[in-house]
Image (cartoon, helix red, strand yellow):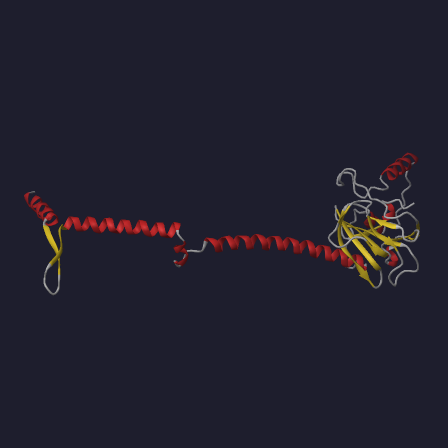
Length: 289
């Protein structure tokens, strides 16, 4: 026990033993600065200095731009730029996808190529194309009257009641005589309406112009994208009053009836109606008389 106490006293004596630190002039040995220190003072000073150095380094790294020069730390500005680029890239992807969809729709309207389109069997055209000519069903008189009433009420409704927006209707682009009807068998996915020369052509519904240009076959053509995946096309116009990107309202004048393009024999409007990527008969939903 006394030995341990003796060792503790010896350690305490060493720690508290005073030393003199003197700084001398090398040539004259003149004393310039002197310090009285103990080993305990030196340990405390070294510990405090280390703690202060660590705290200052941490503050420099956390709150100053110097951290950007330390390997492993990324720049806040670079992070912000990377985030902005990520958001912009995502937006561009969305725009590209929309543009590709619009280009595909425009290509189908311009070329009439339906090779890659599968008709929905639940759609009007799908039911007609399903080939059930061999099935004969004789409805009752009451059923016939009910069907006639329902068909008359829904004649000019493009969408089912459960899916279409309230009060959605299509505006007749022109009034006139239909000289050539909708005929998928001959790839005439439109109707030709003869009307007075220089008659204004009006938008069938609210939408945005996705194509407004001239083609050799159809002359001045304008295509409008509407809600519910609906597209209308107006061909052989004498002139266009709208350009690509313009917003139009139903009934707004977008062109003038003409006779431009190679595939025409006189002034008329070639009108097409497309829904979900395939053409449908406009006369089922629009009254041109």
